[in-house]
Length: 279
Ligand SMILES: Cc1cc2nc3c(=O)[nH]c(=O)nc-3n(C[C@H](O)[C@H](O)[C@H](O)COP(=O)(O)OP(=O)(O)OC[C@H]3O[C@@H](n4cnc5c(N)ncnc54)[C@H](O)[C@@H]3O)c2cc1C
Ligand code: FES
Image (cartoon, rainbow, N blue to C red):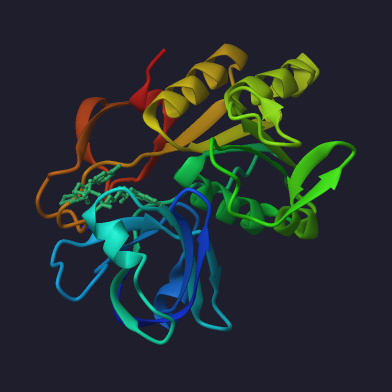
């Protein structure tokens, strides 16, 4: 079981905004979760009072002072489609924060944050956490085939996230869908170009954090291995209990002590990339 406390709260829906392609951003008042949330942690949410099976969603933003968390999701199946009907003022049963999130890259000031689609939330949260203290230079590489569910600003022909601009974090957007102001291709190709332009002697200063669909995570692990930089991946697995009890979310991990079965919900969801994709 996770050593950190997991809070059960009836989260009031403060806002719920729809974006193109069935994407939603929902803000919940969950003060205890907001105070303990960290990048890579998630909530296990009852999407609707009639649906017992919860759904795991990463925490994208948290404000401990105001007591809210914000989530980003895309509808597809039954649970998240039901969630999309939650009205402001209604309450959702939430458990969180759950899981071990991204580390702090103590000796690595150059931080590449790679997020694909609904894998953007944990890396955006990590960008905010690392921004503005002078110790780290975080840089976002985000990819989507749908219009990005964020306010964008055009800078020199490139679209950037306004919130990241405010934090002083450069953001590079990639898409294969021909979105305006975005690099045409995969976000890992864009990150590859950026790393290839960095002097080789600076590579030991780099850390890569990634979340997104499995092929993107694999590409991120390959990228990190090619440049010999440290990387962590935030995994998504099918989950039932999400508190370590059912072993329904286990993955094979190549740990320094050998091959082990790890539960994504409480041993992760963040793992060193080399544990999941050994080179
Ligand atoms: C730690 C973690 C963080 C996540 N964060 C986000 C996020 O921020 N935004 C977002 O949109 N999605 C996220 N997901 C994926 C999201 O939980 C699933 O897409 C969602 O559970 C699907 O529910 P559904 O009822 O809409 O789909 P259905 O396909 O109807 O779901 C049926 C069952 O399969 C499970 N399931 C289906 N797809 C997945 C999947 N990819 N991962 C895990 N379980 C799945 C559901 O929990 C449910 O039990 C995350 C998953 C995990 C494990
Ligand atoms: S979902 Fe039950 S152990 Fe992870």
